[in-house]
Each structure stands twice: as C-alpha cells, then as structure tokens.
Amino acid sequence: MMRYLAPLFAFLVLAAFLLVGLTLNPRQVPSPLIDKPAPKFQLNQLQESDKIMSSDDNLGKVWMLNVWASWCVACRDEHPLLVQLAKTGFVPIYGLNYKDERTTAMQWLKRYGDPYTISIVDSDGKVGIDYGVYGVPETYVIDKKGIIRHKQIGPVTVDSLEKTIIPLIKELQQQA
Amino acid sequence: MVRQLNGVTKAAALILLLFLLVPMTGWSKEAIPVAEDPEVEKRMLTLTENLRCLVCQNETIADSRADFSNDIRREIREQIKANKTDPEIIQFLVDRYGDFVLYNPPMKATTILLWFGPAALLLFGLISLIMYLRRRRVQIEEVSLSQAELEKAEALLNEDKKGKNV
Image 1 (tube, one colour):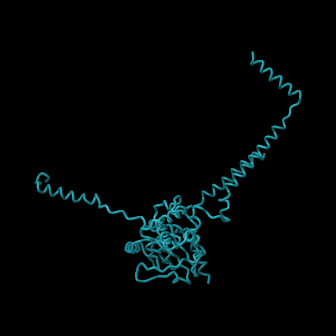
Image 2 (cartoon, rainbow over the protein chains, first blue to last red):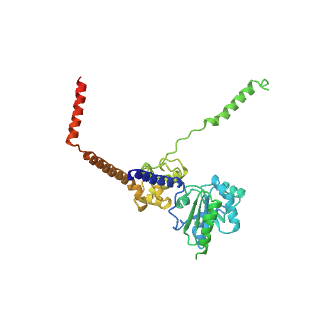
Image 3 (cartoon, rainbow over the protein chains, first blue to last red):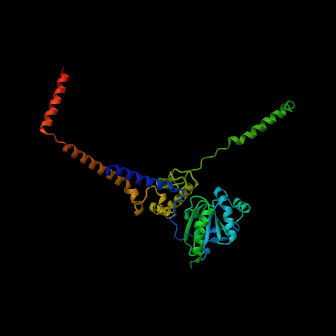
C-alpha cells in the first residue's frame, strides 16, 4: 500500500507548492518600509514652485502620498478615483510628481482634475528611491506619527479602496 | 505645371530638396563618455551584477536598460563617490526595496527552505534509493534453492548446452 501512496503524496506536495506559486504576483514586491517611518524629504511644490513642502508638515494627520507622472498611463486609470476621493475630504492626498516636466504635469492636472492637496516635485527620482518606488503609480498611507502603514503598488482601484485603504485610514484616524 | 519649370527653378527646387534631406543624415557628435571614472564604473558594475532590477525582474541592474536601473546605477555611482562601502550601498538598497533586490538571498528563517531545500530533497532521494536497493538485495538473497532444485536446474542447463552443441 505504502509504495503506491508515497508517490501520490509526493505529487500532492509538489502540486500544492506549484499551485501557491501560481497565485503569487511577482510584480508585487512587499515593501520593507511598511511600519517604518516614512523617509524624510524637502521638495519644491509643483504649482507654487518657490514653496517647499517637508514630510514633517503632515505629522499629526493621516495622509496619502500618491506617486504620479503625466507620462504614466496607469496613473490616468486611477486618477478619476483619486479626484472622487479627494472631493469627499476623507483623507488628504499629496502627489509626488515623479520624474516629470513641470509644464506637462501642470497641464495634466488641469485636464484631468487635481485631487492633490499639494503636489511636490521629484524631478530626478531621488525621493522615489528613498520610498522604494520602482513603478508609477504607487500610493502610500502614512499615519499620524509619520509611519508608513500601507503601500499600494499599481493603480488604486475601487476594490483596493473599499477593502484595504479606506478601512485602514479610518482605523488610523481614530488612533491618537 | 511641371513642364513650365525652367532650368533655373528646377535647379532651385533640387537644391531645396537637398537641404530638406540634410536633417535626415543627422549631425554626429562625439560619444559621451559612460563615466568619468573607470574605477567607480567597475565597482558599480560588480555591485549591480548581483542586484535585481525590480521592473524587469529576470535581469540584473547591470544588464537592464530600464529607467529604474538607470536611476539605481546613478545612485550607486554617487554613493561610491561619497566613499560608501559596498555593504553600506547594498544595505541602502535592501532598506528600500527589501531582500528581493538581491540575487543572492541572505540566510534567514524565511529563506531556510530556499537555501537547504534542494540539498535536503537530494539527500532524501539518495536515502530512499539506498534503502530501496538494500531491501531488494535482501529479497534476492532470500531465494535459496533446495538440493533437488539445484540438480534439476543443472540438468536443465546441461540439456540446453547439449542442444546447442548438436
């Protein structure tokens, strides 16, 4: 009996491993920055280029940092959703304009709407590297203490908003 | 219309055409040097050969043409120039992108299976093979013949030999 069951058992173990492998998404690299303090930055603002925004400016509130660029196609997919979310006033969204041209970025916002409280300019992608950005769009949820609680890789979707991001932000907003 | 063109306008048109073609040939410039410092470039290359490009995940950062890899290479050059050691630079990237950026994964509780899995599987296979072979040998040895059976077997063999000799 055993001599017939052993290969079957081995096959089932292998099949289980392969099945798990199929459901994993290699594009979604888990960020080591989750539950770590958000990297500090001091960047020029997009609209008022003479003004500087610092990451510390948002201490004490829960906020979202959305990495975007006018050249990024997937950014346009998520954009209407961000505009809608911004209108509710539920959470302030800050834009990190990643490796973009100021003029085209401004035109883009004019055309598709501007959901951002403030957009800041990361023209050479240095702050992007600090945040572990490897594709646009990416969105971070940062809590009142300035700690990264969530990273959305790829466009924000209705599903990810409803299931993950909004419940998480509600929870974080209640914390002291 | 074409017929009305005289020699002068034809020549002018030809010259104009030539001028229009000029941009196609382009103006070649001297190649921009890849890096000012070959030492820095060499160190950067050896470092990036063991780092994974996160955009095109089966390529090293050294091989990849992705924008992401360009940025990382630039970052590494800058850090080398700032006198950072190789482990410091690697740690900088691991802090931001996780162990995934390393092609050579560190030994940790979560990577034990990765490190020793194949060897353990091989060992398991070898042990099972040895056990199987031993069992089989025992089985072969167990077959013992009685004196009568041996004689019968010999008789049969001899019969066979006679048959062949004829």
